Image (cartoon, rainbow, N blue to C red; front, side):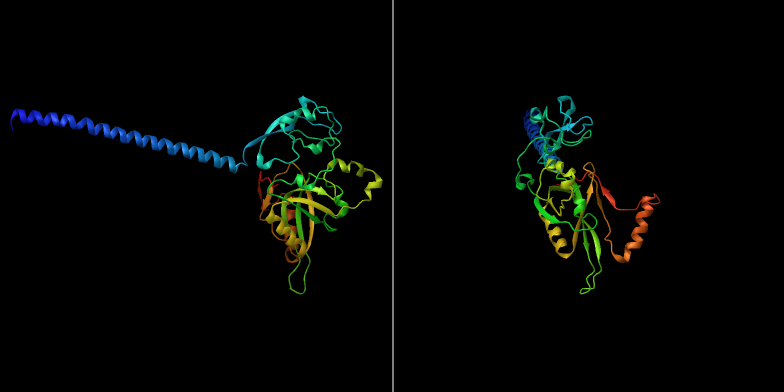
Length: 293
């Protein structure tokens, strides 16, 4: 091959190399852009998933910073702001934007630090509200009749709208079917919307006097999901319902609570008493922070 031909081959090689390099750079840039877009979409998805899993966007609510006794006039320095997922916001909660509406108003009950401030905690004259206005979206208001027993009608006088209860179903022995009686923890941490016909805590302030003490309340209206309402309806048909009052600050929900029957009553009693004495800790497992209704 002549020198001229060799020079032509070299020149041709020099002309092709930059073209291949430029194409490789374009492909690399496209790959990097696609990777960046994928990462951005993943971040958006994870943020949305985290937001939905945590209860949705945050809402600023008023909270109590220090102990407040009943009848105390609220002042600005007594209140703070706490962000709560929108799914866990009660209908009666006071928003931070409504601060000016509650300053100078007396409290109807004692409040502890970190308690969320509710409109029902305030000693204000309010008209009777429709029950439907208290039901949060996705829930239902279900009225149950609580039988005499674990928490009979006399005990219900101590329950107020806004309290939290556990629901227990008790089934009597049925000779026709051969099924033994049983007690089942049906639902835990259920919000009470109404006691009798009252939806306001202030309505029970008069119940402290003797003339009102003779009143018997046998119905409670609870805030339930539709499937929970099914459970309650069938349980009420098959047996009797009782409720046990729990602390408003206790958000613990226990799982694997065994059904109690006459056949295992003694063994369960011994197990419970051993646990109370600290001999063992093999009871139902708590699910911390589970907020129902």
